[in-house]
Image (tube, rainbow, N blue to C red):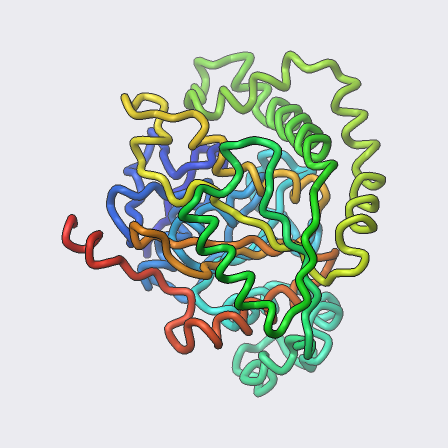
Length: 370
């Protein structure tokens, strides 16, 4: 019996929780672990389990998966029920999977669904039984659609300089996108409505987090919140009510505009996920002399807007930087295209990692230091 640590109340983009020991990244003890599903990412990356469930409200599956060099899948909003999960921002909260293999992630996802939902997502998987011993599960990869030629939209640019990939990251990303062009049509796109989507995502997050923790904010002596949780919950208390109403009202319209503008002629959108790479703990902890607020904000610069639209997204490593730390991409799909996202990850895994899967491996320099 064991427990996995996470950010307090899932309210943190790092795995730092004042109530628990800090999780250790298997890649390097200096490397931070993203949050909030930090313990889940570490356990999978360290080989303690094949896969783990997590929650994602603004990147809480994708960011820890990326910092630990494994696969992280955020599902379409509502695909998996959040019943039994403590809420952070219910409109944004999503259940997902972390794994070292795309097929492991697919099997856990399929097992987590109702039979009717499984039939819609994995259309080639016979929905005959919930038992994992059923022969159908042995051929799950046959239920992952594999187009002969992929259509990808690619956007590496960000309106904020700290969220634009650094030179080492850009080199790995550009090399990968050039390599992938041999079996995919890649079109360069610009996310012109990114600021608007991010603003609405932030409004919903803060407003609903305030509602979730309203009692603790009014009577802090009953159950004091950590500084990180308070920092996430307090802004919503000061927001005009019509901000939240507007953000909710515009969600469908803005999502449809995004799908029409960005994914009309593409299967998926590829973006960076950690534009400045996996930072050290010292760069993202506010009480550290080396704290850099831009490094902290950059962690969720490419993820939060996806939750506002409720779209599925997957992240996985495609190389390493000069420190031997993973360079990952994020791939965003249309609603309920989880099988397509997993199939794409499976294709990359087979061609670049083979049987090793998305498993973190420290560079000689990192091993020498630790």
